[in-house]
Length: 114
Length: 111
Image 1: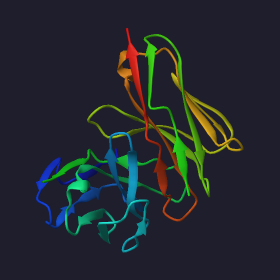
Image 2: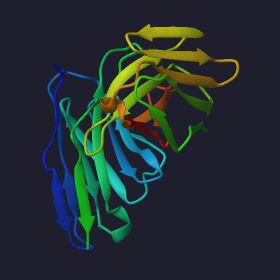
Image 3: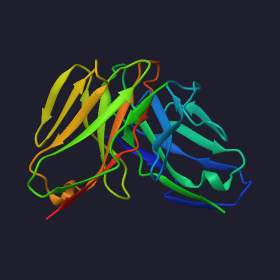
């Protein structure tokens, strides 16, 4: 069974802090994704990666960066947290070279920026 | 760009059938997914369509028309546990399988 693990379930940070959200998957998947989920807006793609050290911007990359130094780990970085980044953050992975591989999600990190 | 539309909320009765529609516009298409998400939990995969037609999987079926940019998820013999959000997602054909989601449809199943 695919397991995607996010390091924290709940996180409270102050405005201006640098925040790291970590995600690890154990199925040797090539593709990894970071989304944020807000009521009424659904899941919005922040960044994704299809290989080690490779990254692509999603629809809302502003204020975020990512790091993928190892295949199993994909980190989301908030360089200077702001209150409008309060949200649920979901990491996902998918494998293979075929388009029918579904996303496997972690349990999410609820981030509150005060 | 990509745009995915689905109804915000639906209500149905236990034992009935409900159809959740999804329309999409995309610059490149590599399949359409449906996910289920219970409150406070992560989304889980339900179905995948890449060719036109109906895919059936137990009580759930999903239909795709690529020419119309249209899909629906059909849930039969509704159960209370089917109360959840249903997310329509489109994958494009860029490297890395970028996947974009609609805002989701909250389904309430009443007794």
